Image (cartoon, rainbow, N blue to C red; front, side, top):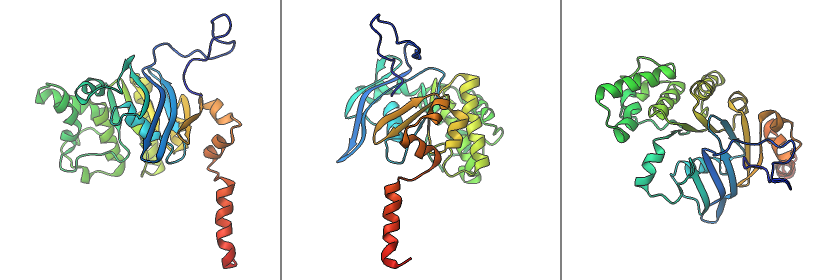
Length: 283
């Protein structure tokens, strides 16, 4: 189900043929539950995420994917369960203690979340101002390096309103990596972009993982993105992990829910209810 190690056999060793994940996951979630009022979003998620891995989390809307990212970065605390970052439990930490953890975690929010009143350089340098004692010149150099990584050199003075949607996403990505984090979380990174701009973002995410070794966790509905980025596919459904494997195994599974998601097929009962709605109209 999850990235947790398989149970040992009678001799205390992993069962024959079982994939043995690396020791010491970067992120570990143990039986995590989360509700908002009467709405149960996560229903006992256990998951290990490993250094240097590109894990893509997919699933229908409302299954808790974005909530999971917010729990990992400490923006919200689970109702129940445990969250570890580099073997340190973080779900009980206060805001001041979480600062040191968050310095190691970059996050690209769904719509980029740039500050409209700040130019590109100030947007990118915002984490440096908040979390480092760098000089202005050091911050400018770090900003320029981040922009080079996302292929947008020389736009420091531009305002977000002067950028295309794809450029805004790339600037937001530059801000996410400017602190040189060990892991970056991406919440629907290609939302609102055409297929060509989406491919640029996918290539950037993949390159940051493969070339710089940045651990990558991507939440997406976009299966084209998942195909390009993932070396591990995880599917959430109804607040639970229902599939967790390498991409080839994921695509070949005989699980109906997974196959319907991969191929974009609605639940037959949902389609039938729509058809019934047209019957009184005689059409």
